[in-house]
Length: 425
Ligand code: HAM
Image (cartoon, rainbow, N blue to C red; front, top):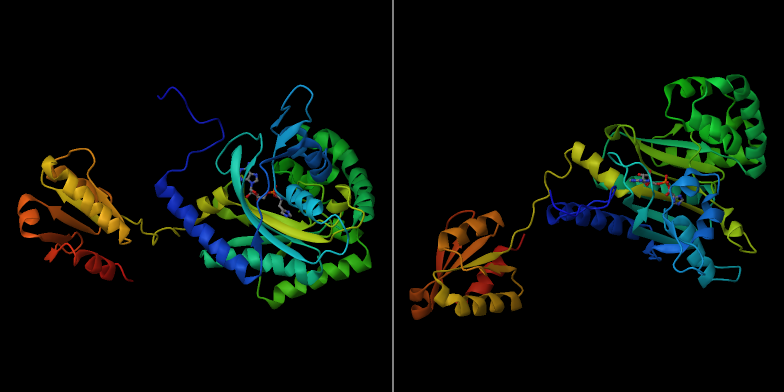
């Protein structure tokens, strides 16, 4: 075993897998551009208070999952970002301190850090693709954001995903519901598991999304949050559902969906994949109009967004066989040299081909011709170009198509044209 291993919960990604990431990222960039979203990049760390205020101090993320440190003895506490929404809103408020800013449509593909117990689909460093629509959170805006997320899934070919939606109402609705839920749960208090008993005090709504079957049985009979929200809130939620139906997006209203971050109000949603096992949420989001004021803004900035876990997306795609058609790209040509005395000539040819825009590999390790051919095949090179004494003397080189074994004798000037022509789709 190597002396140094990656930190627990962090993973290396090698080129074979990076191909998959690039493919997914390409789909994300093209679908988000259809909806007018542009990329935003924010710092990997922020002052700790941002997350305490933004995400909420009673949440699991802030309570136990943040990587927090002091940069120097007198410095302000800093935290590696556990999610992007608070940082994006902070950046937005910093850039636009006044009121009356127009609508902003932002997306990101970003690395995040949470000190969770690592398991399949749950890492300590992970990546999210997400989007934040700032300045509007009308039912049409909520539906637009959900549509964009679903279009990314559809374009990638995913199937069998379930979209769960719920309305969390406004702050007063939730306060009222909290008390109702506590009264309902009180007689069952001793039957709750430890985590749920802790939540009973701090954040009883989170008991609703417990993964423990015994707790799930208890909450099945709990009053519904949706029954606690105002008539206007209910009407807005129905409009969101109407837009989704209009667009042919299947959903389930799930009374137990509450989400794990405090900034949400009104519509919240989550997408789950049966392929994922215990960590079945592939993405989630909702409206978070209250966050801007929580972060010190004088005026409320309506907002809605979502984030999707890239690693969970990849696991689901792998299980659904969606990478099968993704061919790894080898170099267009491998320059094979007969012996070491031709190294300079081979390097010159490789250089010339690269300058002509052709991906070219050659031997840098003094290997035999047979070993070079093995390497060309391992790298999935399209062609082999042989450089031997006879070729150099005659100026006519052999170019072999490694798929069909067809061979051509060509002058060095003709080779780039043939290779470029052959790589056209
Ligand atoms: P979240 O539900 O905490 O929401 O995370 C969104 C997604 O990130 C999850 O559904 C999951 O796929 C992935 N994820 C979360 N934690 C891990 C982990 N430890 N390892 C691997 N994947 C993970 C948010 O973060 C909100 N900021 C979403 C949002 C954006 N709401 C509004 N705008």
